[in-house]
Amino acid sequence: MSNCWTRLVIVVLLIIAAILSYVDRGNLSVVLPEISAAFHLNDRQLGQLASAFFWSYALFNVVMGWGADRYSPKWLFAWGFFIWTLATLAMGFANGFVMLFCLRLLLGVGESVVYPAISRILLDHFPEEKRGLPNALIAAGTKIGPAISIAIAGPILFRWGWRELFILTGAVSLLWLVPWVVFVPNTHSKKERGLEPDSNVKFGELMTQLPFWGTTIGFFSFGYAVYFLITWLPSYLELDRHFSKEKMLVLGQIPFWVMGGVTVVFGFLGDGLVQRGFSATFSRLTFLVGGLSLCGISLLAVPFTSSDDLCIVWLALACAGLGMFSANAWAITQTLAGEHAAGKWSGVQNAIGNLGGAATSIITGEILQRTHSYNNAFFVAAGILLAGILSYALLVRNVREILWEMAGESFPVSSLKTTASLIGDEGQSSNK
Image 1 (tube, rainbow, N blue to C red):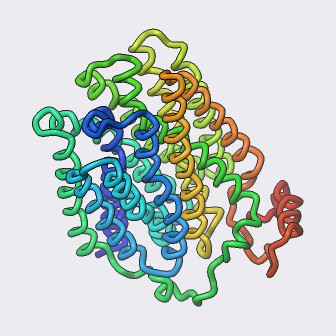
Image 2: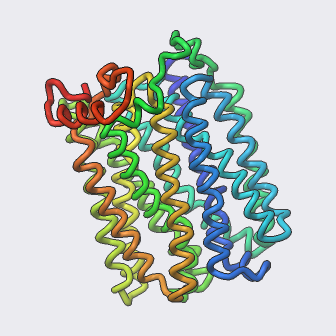
């Protein structure tokens, strides 16, 4: 295959995989009321069930990040995909809370491959000035995945039931493996990239870099907000806003479709600004901070809105802000990390980011158990977004590849001080 054709095939398959990953992890949120009734679960138990995915997902992102820097991301991705689709299918046969909890843990193990492998693949195939759009298209897939999950859940639920939803989505997803194995070249293992076994950045060295902590804290705040919406929005509309199941299945999709569309638009804009000579710092970081700000303001407005239509508008604006963030966030990480740290950085960042998903599941479940209202849950999400805004604004000052040799052989406080003292200097920054 030609290089252009290879890139197209890879991006299309990764978009589909991203959609399927969010369909499979989002199915639970659509059927929480049905599962609660079937197994007599309270709000605290539902929060624990929703959080199970994120604990294993976060832990294994670190493992997959290490693996993506050493081994072929094609086969790493294929095995992860196989595991998560089987876990989804098996949920249709669950006999209670414990089995569902364990299968959600397994789902997290499989899906932990997604972002570390994608970062490695895109870094291998796309230059920096053309990396924003593929990242944005894949990110858009993750954002419309919940919308598609809600859309397909309705007909399946009404015709068959919640068990069939898991069985059908898991079985159909397995078909994706065929074109992935056949058409994607296996050319980017560590050995084939010409790298020595010890040429990657060590975890200790990675953690001495302030930009790493800036993106990681930012992703925690993003993870908290986006999974707050993915996990609890259907239940919020149905139980707190008293939408019928049919109305929720229609209007509940809108914010996620908006998020997906905005992600593509701002990924295109970010690439366009870089190609016109604007710095990556201006072109991408501005959209990240602006997007988190828009989301936080919109979430604060939702509890004060009495109109159902206006509520959907505010939720759509919140998702638009998250779309602005998603469009350029991974491009920034890939640029900062560079060849030697992309998989590891992405894995740790996504692991901590998804602890935000675990936190939002537990905290929101506890808030509901205590107050029987979502209002405080919206306020908490907005507050955590503020921490993300500050982390990007203060710690990620220059979006340029890290000069890893500046971290030295040992990693105590002196290395952090060196990074901090240079971070504002364009000519001699720790970001080149």
